[in-house]
Amino acid sequence: MKTVYTCFCTDVIHDGHLNIIKNAKEYGCVTVGCLSDREMIRCTKFPTTTEAERMELYRSIDGVDDVILQDDMLYDDVIEKLRPDYVVHGDNWKDGAERAVREHVEKKLAEYGGQIIDVPYTFSESVSKVDRRLKEKLGMPEYRRKRLRQLIGMTPVVKVMEAHSGLTGLIVEKTVIEGEDGKLDQFDAMWVSSLCDSTAKGKPDIELVDMTSRFRTIEDITEVTTKPIIFDGDTGGLTEHFVYTVRSLERLGVSAVIIEDKKGLKKNSLFGTEVEQTQATIGEFCEKIAAGKKAQLTDDFMIIARIESLILEKGMDDALERAHAFAGAGADGIMIHSRKKDPAEIVEFCDRFRQTDKTTPIVVVPSSFNVITEAELAKHGVNIVIYANQLTRSAFPAMQKTAEDILRYHRAKEVDDRLMPIKEIITLIDEI
Ligand code: SPV
Ligand code: MG
Image 1: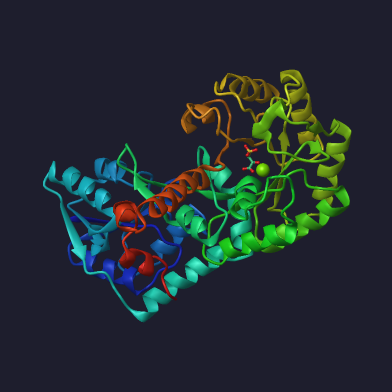
Image 2: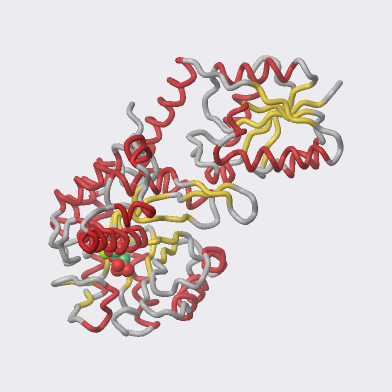
């Protein structure tokens, strides 16, 4: 009896999966792999059920002889252990990002004479309905909201990219690359930055764009995406107002708000001490955190306290004292910020904080200290890395240069080479 293997990374079984099993069965004894949570996330398929639940589901399918966990999207672990004669997969992996995975599997199998069987992908009304439903479910507030807490437990470091519109949201949602290790990779969540949201509206980052407008930005993003959202809540405003913001954000399906320990007129942190900024006292800020936590209605929502001591040159001890106090007041995470190019002070903060607090998630925003990698930050206890403004900062100079060149040449021919083809822009956004 030949060994046949197929890998599933789905929470719902549809006709397409049943067809794979039916085809696989013709070649021998069928083992189904359940792709682990960690790897499923990297493949852009966020699980809504546990690994155990998915394994149970696959075991219940007629024709399945065994179910195992696959913890490598490139199949290396399974191929080494099981040495299947055949790997069966829908032929949709011949194109797009999954192509690299197929090529890798083909090479591994060839080492001992194994073979891939590509089964024609099932394009049917019921299959696309299941796929659409699953995607819509992930975008619903109750699923989206809890996803950040889930991710912190599932992935070594949660990678977050800024979004300030439906379009930038789609970039964060859909960008997938084949990484250096040959595996697919993508962003885990979105950061609705006050800087980028304000800049997109042509306004300074001083809490001038009001909450109604900030919420509208969130809605533009949630309408077209499913990934979790971390909201930049600036200072949180008055405590009496912050409690309402918390409720609204929960209702919108946002996973977390980050508020910074400043008061009065807020300016962007990257100005550092070049502008007048006032830090709230530990007592004042603890009170705001505690009020927010009391107002919150769901278990999933997170209030993350952002410490400005290093930005305002108040010293490491002050930053650490605040971090412990804010965690004690109920903060679900600590964001430590720095505008130094050298990541040393961030690393020192994380190491010292982790000496006594092993669990409170640490968030960093490496805009200035951009030489340090995600993996290095994770080694120092960082859980969430936010790329806070890079999409805006790359788009603005490109747009400005195009505007200048059209003025210069009195026509658009000279800029055409760097533009997206018209055919691509008109088909960029799918119709439902
Ligand atoms: C933002 O993106 O608006 C932030 C991060 O708050 S920073 O600009 O670095 O202060
Ligand atoms: Mg901000």
